[in-house]
Length: 328
Image 1 (cartoon, helix red, strand yellow):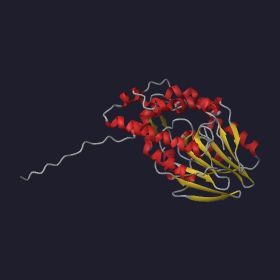
Image 2 (tube, one colour):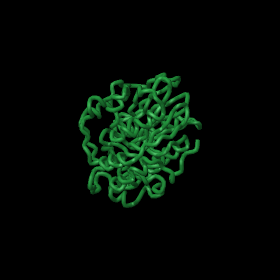
Image 3 (cartoon, one colour):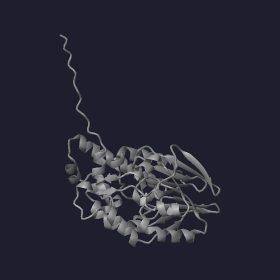
Image 4 (cartoon, helix red, strand yellow):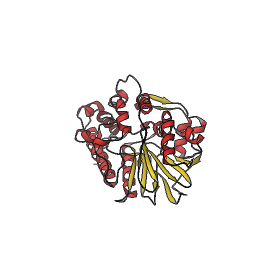
């Protein structure tokens, strides 16, 4: 399956461009407001669009992270719920897809741009599935310094109630749905959803197609985990697999390879600079991501911000301790 060119990025990216300048330097950059507020405002002004894929599966774009919907005789099975301000727009598109009610919602991780719609999805009849770590983050106050925002606990109606602790297989509308946890990567509670019959993989934010990803260090995420998750996605994909990223256009295995290779290459470059003793500000000034920026640096996570995120996740090598033989 051919993917859209970078000049045809979906409305979700166009709508969130307002936040990109706010996120360029990470937590150290001066901001007039949190990018969370800017992204919420953009979601309120952005239309929700639908792209039909195959096997009764569609992707909805325009409200935070991408939303996957399987529609059939058994009802609707949804992956992620976007931002609550988009409720009416999402419900309108769901009704256009078909009249059957929403039965299940999977949260790929806890971030609000994927879970803020949980409460209305539950009110519409959805059982919400997630990892225990996702429910834990949503149940407590969580500060994300990189977004300059403190998230209060989610309302009880929006919390996941069907918790998975390992791989889970479900049958729904003739489809075999495999829900699989990742290692700690983007957050400490990421999972994928694979629709086996349709060969469609929904990755959440372990894959951002054509744009630099956010890594949530506030809950234990890291660049090395992101690389391991990217490799796990590749292991699940065939040359036929349609891949729905957390952000960016629908992709395929070649896009997964490009994303993994970008992460590996930038990590290697930044690691070498950090081991030479560069401070994070010196590293950002050196533009270690420059060769990737034209393709990957045009979304919410700007090149400088991404360089800081990668730098943070690389340990500094300690000098070797030399032992001296006291014998003569």
